[in-house]
Picture 1 (cartoon, rainbow, N blue to C red):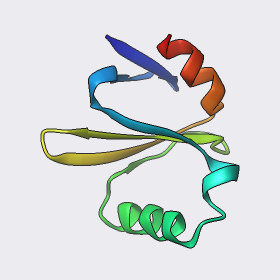
Picture 2 (picture 1 turned 90 degrees about the vertical axis):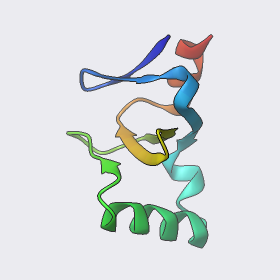
Picture 3 (picture 1 turned 180 degrees about the vertical axis):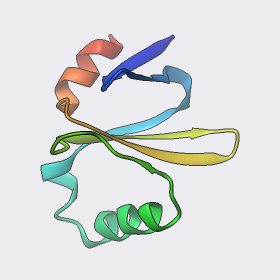
Picture 4 (picture 1 turned 120 degrees about the vertical axis):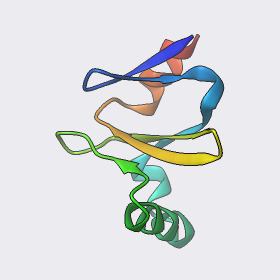
Length: 80
């Protein structure tokens, strides 16, 4: 199955490591460092607007961070 994350994008449910709300996790220095490093490596897939959450995936040995305008609670409901 796939999860629609907005912006005409979808990710495989089996590849999802976690769904994180930007306001809650960006207060952590480690998370900010992780996102900064992922951006430098080109692993961040941006969205058109201000992101509310991000989806971390791992597939074929590659990690990707998908920024999305949808709230993490909305994405969680879509998974169920």
